[in-house]
Image (spheres, rainbow, N blue to C red):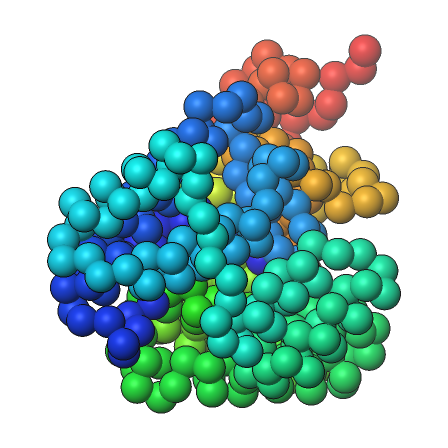
Length: 381
C-alpha cells in the first residue's frame, strides 16, 4: 500500500502523565517532527514524486526511511514523557537546549515492549535470515510486539502461515493498546505511533485474505481501517476501490461511490480511472462517460495503453512513481486495476473505441478533429 505523508502525529497519552504534561509533550513532538520534515523538504527531491503503494515497496525518496522516522518520533516521545512540562514553551525550550548541546539524548527503552519494538524496527530494515531472527528475539522479549509478527508474516511464502502471523500481530497490537486506548484514539489511529504496528498487521491480513479468496473479509478489514483512521495514511483506499470493483455487486458499487466521495480531492490515476469504471458499471453512456475518460486521460494518459496491450508491462515493478507518469499507470493496474477492468468485456471494448474516438490528434498521429474520426479508414503512409 501506499504510505501517505505524516499528519496529525500525536504522542502517546500515557496514564502516568498529567493532561497538561501530555499536551505539552504532544505539541513539542509535533514541532520536532515538523522541523525534520521542513529540513527534508529543502533537500533536492525527485519532481512530483509520491510514495508508491506498499506491496510494490515503491517510494519517492530512496534515502528516506519511514521506519527510522517513526522510530525517532517514538524515542523523542519517550524523552519528553520523562520530563515534567506544564506548557508547550517549556518543552520546546528543553529540546532547543538539548539540540544546542549536540542532542537530544535518546533514552533507553524502559519496558519490554519498547525494547522489543526497537528490535522490530531493526528487523524491518534487515534482509535475509536476520529479519526473522530479530523478529523472534523481539517476541521472546515481549509477545505484544505486533511488528515482529508482521515481519514473520512478510517473510513467509505460505499464505496460511502468513495469515496466522498477521492475526497474532493484530491480537498483540490490541493487547498493547488496551481496550480503553483503542476506543479513545478511534478516528485518528495513525496519529498515535503506538497504534501503527496494529494497523500494519491488519493491512497485511487483508491482503492475505484477498489472496486466499476470502474477499468479503478482506474488504471488511480495509473498511474498518478507514473507520479507525479516516485520513488513510497507509493508502488502503486504493486497493479497496479496486477490490470493490472486482467483486462488482450492487452493494459494492454503492460502497465504492461513498468511498470516492470520502476523498473528493484525490488527484491520482487510481481515483480517476476508478470513477470512470464506476460509471461504466452503472451503464452510463454519452457525454458524462466521455468526460470521465478525458479527465482520467488528463490525470494519466498511459493507463489505457497498458490495459489494451499497446505498451508492454515492465518485467519488474517500478520502484518510484510520479503523478501522471508510466510508473503510476503500471502500479495502478498491478494493484488491482487490471482485475477490476477485465471483469466485464464490454468495459474494455468501450475503452478501446473511446480512445480512438476521443484521443487528441497528436496522440494518434492525425490532424483531423476527433469528432470526424469515427468510421474513417486509416490513412496509408
